[in-house]
Structure formats: C-alpha cells, structure tokens
Image 1 (cartoon, rainbow, N blue to C red):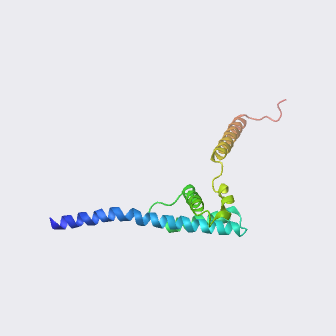
Image 2 (cartoon, rainbow, N blue to C red):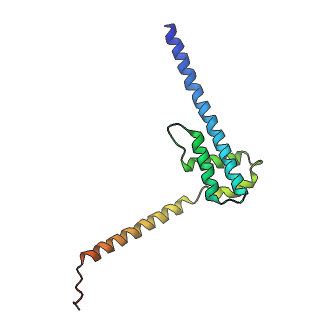
Amino acid sequence: MQRFKEKKIKLFALVIFTPLILTTSKVNAGAFGAEIFCTMRDGGNDHESSWEAAYAYIKKQKGGFFKVSPKNAAAQITETVVREKEKLSYCIEYLDELHPNRKLLRDLEKEEKRKEKELEEATEQFSDETLDRYSY
C-alpha cells in the first residue's frame, strides 16, 4: 500500500512538472528564434533567409514527437517581439512578412487550380478529336 502511494505521488509530480519544463524550453526557443530573425533582418538579410534560420532553430529546440509548424513558429516570434518591444523595437516593421495575407494566398491557389482544370479539360477534348489534315 505504501509503494502504491509513492508511485501515485511520483506520477502526480511528473504530470505537474513536465508541462512546465516543456513550456519553458518552448518560450526560450521562441525568444531566441525571434532574436535570430530580428538580428538577421536588421543586418540586411532578406526575409526568407532570416525566417529559415529562425524556424530551423525553433524546430531544433522543440524536439519531441511533434514538430513546430511554421505558423506556430511565426506566432512565437511575434509574441516575443511584442512582449519585449523595448529590446526588439527595430523588428516590429518586419512582423507583417511573417503573417502573409492568408485569404489572398487561398484565393490565388483556387484560381491556379481552376486554370489547371480548364487546361486539362481542353487538352482532353483536343486529344479526343481526330485530326484529318486533308479535311476542309
């Protein structure tokens, strides 16, 4: 009975402290990822290279079974810049590039798919016809 209580206490402690440890590393990864992004952008690097470096660092630090999505990493960088706006005030102008207009991107993708479908239909229709080069 005593062993069962000890195991129960250990399990309870594990359940309580594990999220705290994981959250702390996530916050630190996001904070340093934001510093990487902001420092590179301020140094004259383009958005893509700065984003790739920051995102790679955040993914590497997260670990575990689930990886950080690009959207989540961008949110972490934004949160850090807003939270530490005195320290990272020069980076505020670059945040809009982390969150592109999602609706515009979806609309462009739909339009592209529609055009591809029309092209496929036209190609199928054309290939079904037999061409007789001597028919006038």
